[in-house]
Length: 320
Image (tube, rainbow, N blue to C red; front, side, top):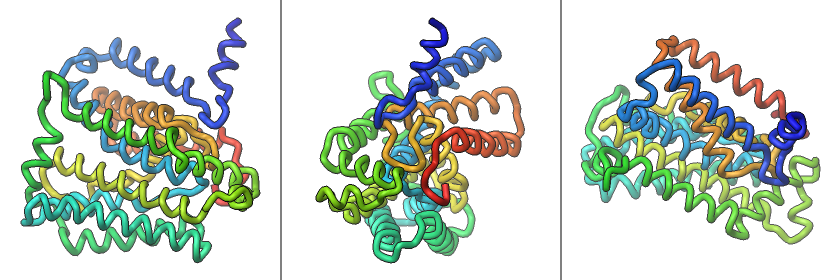
């Protein structure tokens, strides 16, 4: 009976991937931290945990759009930093907020065009974009500073009806992403394209009438817009612009997606798994902070976790 239960947990559920096991891991980490330290279950720490996890949850959800089609986006971290830098300029929110989403859409459009039209590998294309955005960001704001609009700060901090504002952010983002990924033709096309890529037949979806290039391009646009949204949230938390705040967010997002059971080769994954994967990373970071683990060791542990989960996946695409 125990073997059957474990087999069920470790058996991917169709295109939803393996996400039940990460859920149990998140529960186990929570129980361990609750028993290990008194601060973990305190309301202040739980509030901080939700707020700390939200930017990663949002970024990982966006990353999932491109991972499902067999791609990766390494530019999201620099885009988060760019968003905080723009919001901290001496300009009203009704100008800066639309500006960052317009820029994010252009970034995603550029990534998608380079990948689909010039046939550049997603890692190379988005890595190049990362450097471009990082350079622009550091020209705009070489060091942290400035003040973001009050509307951003108020939308992130505090509570509403006793519920922390980040919870409302999470619910809204998950509902929108769920509709796009699991409740629309667009999402169905993404999984179909990724399934073909994972099986070594990238033209399979196109042969059945799916506009693959357009959908891949839109996936990268969605990924960039979610990264900008994460940047808005993060700017509201730190109340300033910071050219380095998005550092390594792209790797954390990829790790969260992989931990949640999404295949990096494409075609298999679930929104709930991605959210759980992000929460697992947030719990690990929170627990290591509470137990005074060095930030450098934390980074090494995350790198090892990414290597482990990718190594356990079946990969049929060169470069992953």
